[in-house]
Image 1 (cartoon, rainbow, N blue to C red):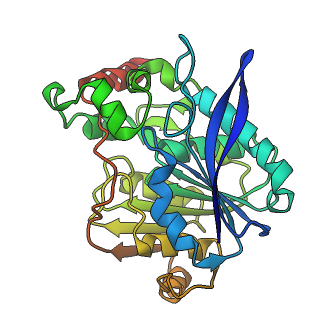
Image 2: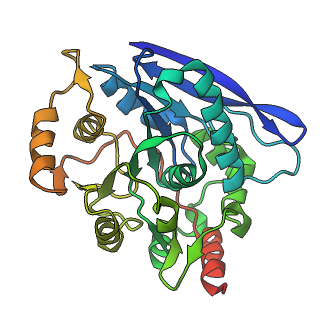
Length: 319
């Protein structure tokens, strides 16, 4: 299987900057998986999944570093990091990929972790390309105020590392750490109510397949979000991962669920062949439970403390 690191130059006002992405898998495939990381993640978070899919055929896999993360350029000058910037970059990336892999562009699957899942929903709503499948890593159709307050409120200021140190650990621009805590970071239009930010309208015309992987101990994707997704999309696959919080780690069994959703065929003895077990579970119910030990390969805890708490409180007070 092929692997390479690539760069596309995206238009940003009157300048251009580099958006780094990785390509792997079966480059002649008519199917593409695009992986979008979480708010402070890089594309390296998908490394276990890439290694797993190397043992399967029939998929081009794209992983991306959003701006200011990993190997992608940071934003210049006083420009702020915001959801609209990420969405514009991803749209340009899709256009770029369509020139290289035209056969795969009618069969695109999006995999998004947390914020990456939200961006995937906006791509579905606004992209000119046909999105066949959506896979969400611990994010539902509603981003609840109270869940986010709980998630980010568990670490005090004194536990928060300095921005310079943390940015090196996470391989992100230090300015990004400040920008994600501002109200202006989420600058895309959305519906809201007392429960939280609502995104179901973004999928109102979506006819593709949906897979939700959510952690048993998640404070961001609780049973309320799971039940909501099941009610709106009854055929969606809902998989609870025991002993996991937010987000879900890409363990072999989780990777196998993704491979099954993509209908990939195993070609290597190095891949863990659990697809038959997952197929059986998916046939019997649209909600299954998977248990495995807590992964030790997750990124450092990226909760933001009181600054992000004030940010979400300001959202809740807006009408």
